[in-house]
Image 1 (cartoon, rainbow, N blue to C red):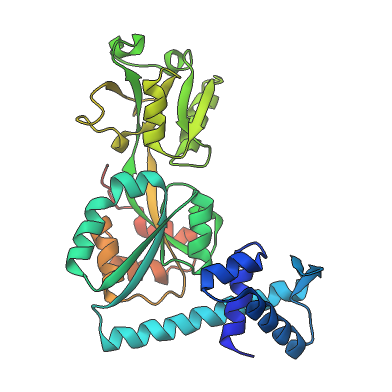
Image 2 (image 1 turned 120 degrees about the horizontal axis):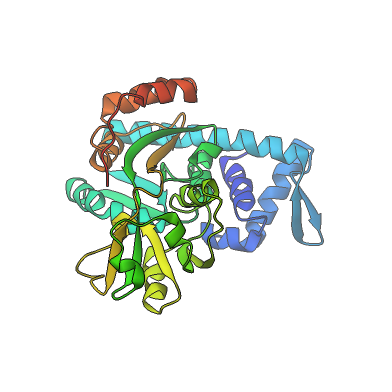
Length: 324
């Protein structure tokens, strides 16, 4: 059994059993991966994948158990590498994070700029996706950090630390009837077609909950994962936009009017999640603190000592989170 074989089966599983896509991502050949998988199956005496002709179709029950253990082994290998690199040169390495468009576009630029200036020899990799996708990447160990508002709680092996609170604004073209309102109500908002985030993105659940509590059914005519796309369609007159307040730029978006909606929707909390057992290099603690100043190294280490969500919530219960 070789580590390379374990990496191959893990990556094949991550690529939805597409060996060709796996080969491209690993810069190797499809026949080479297929051969190594068969050699591993022959050695173990069980099938990890079922097949239809040359194509892999499913993960077998034995394969699922093997993949879980393989993931743990490969994580330990990465842990050992990181540990050795930390002792050899703490200023070099790599850091991968997964996040949504809103965080990448509006919340993270200053942090990343400062981090790169402080650690020029650390390669920083950002992946974007849905909250579920990015949380799974962190849960599987594909990235060190996941930064999102939704879905992090779906994975028990992630330690989730609150970063900041935020709320929404309503965007309308200048001259729109709502632009004259001194204090919006949900009833007024519900009269117009809405352009907002896809469900599961950027605190969308808080928006839906607010309408449900009032017994209102909003007319959502267009959804997107990207606040800039939402603003484009508001400009086209498709509807009024509901976006994270941070996504409105007074200079760049001066053709739109931003209306405060913090009294209409409950605030959301953006969190940073990291897999339990991750080896933290010095610059990883610094990245977290640059993004959320209250998450110092001592606080992060205390969070990882918490045994469950109840203890974690208790740790942060007295924290006054900054507003974005």
